[in-house]
Image (cartoon, rainbow, N blue to C red; front, side):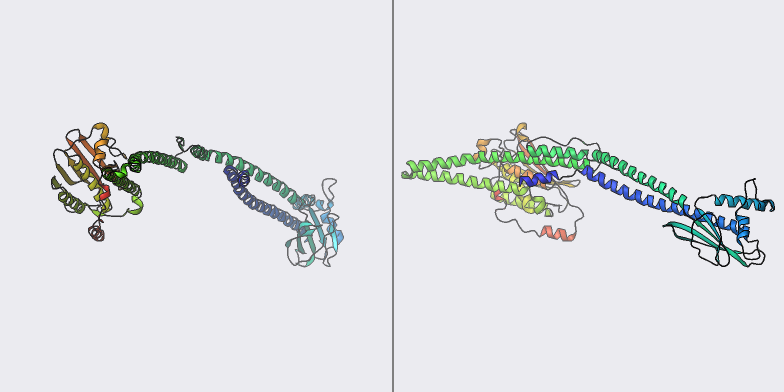
Length: 522
């Protein structure tokens, strides 16, 4: 297995090389297509120029030989197509006008080209003249025509034209001009070499540029990878991705990763703290139960009074552990509210009045006052049982710590887009130092008295987690000896449809015992 992983690691190809390769491949395709189009266009232009040379040569020959009325002879053709230039002019040229000298010059220019072969044939297709000793197959035609053919195994252009008399229009012979395209091939060969070099240079430059660009663009990814490896080696590490100033998607990814690492670190810290707290809380009841059982096993079972006392103490500690486990489950469920209860809607007024009436009935020795400053029904996005659970926790704490003045004030009001729920007691109050910790798990203001009152220190933590999960907030104002005020704020739902209102008003009453496990203390 390890060898397989090592092989995969060895076969890994860097993203920079992949980027450089595929970029070069793209540039190669573009440059090749451009070069092919350019080459084809340029060769077409060169071929057209060669055709123009053939046309000019045919025109020159035709102009010199179309003055005859009878079919051409070898002597006639030689006279006009082989001028004597030893003394600067030919015999024929001396007998012609200045315009004839122009033709003679044109013939000399055309005949001097190495690639041009000129052949003249009589009306019986017998060769009368050839400018160079090179066998060329003659193909008769009734009009001027330029075709592409093979000459000595290579591409060539052949232009053929019937020679007609200017005087009577009769056929006097044929002229054929063959272009071996030597200059054309040399020029196109040079152009092809230049284009190949251009393609290679372009690909090399594109590969180098793409590699450097990829290295720069992937630098943030290298930072992210380095950070992930550090956290992988040490989950408790505080390593984070450095601030990226690229202002792009990679910077957003780095910020998202840092946020996820911070959140994971908080979860790890909370888990460790949770395990430590639970271990500490369960240690005492387990030790108590163990002590009583050991005592009973040694001698207490023979004493009915000791036996009864030990069993009652063990049962009490067992119930407290059961309550603790239930509260821990409530706290765990509160972390999954967005998944299970994200769309629940509740009428705050109904729940508030129900809890108010329940506590009036359960605690007749207390005075409860209720101020409702809302105008009509107020709806919030929260599961009904959860809102009731929060109110039960707050009222239960108010009652537990109201030792002298047994009075609790409740108020319900709206401001802007929030609904405010306040629970005020006139009990012992909380110090400034304790106010910052009352929402922590297992925290008690007075541990000894809270344990005697049956609390585990999870109630306010559950309430805090529930309210924040529904995008609200919970706060406390308190003073030692004067009591405390807990305030809950939740966002109000506006523009509700009639169907949503009916669904919220028709919610079933919470199941029996839904809030029992949440009667906690600070």
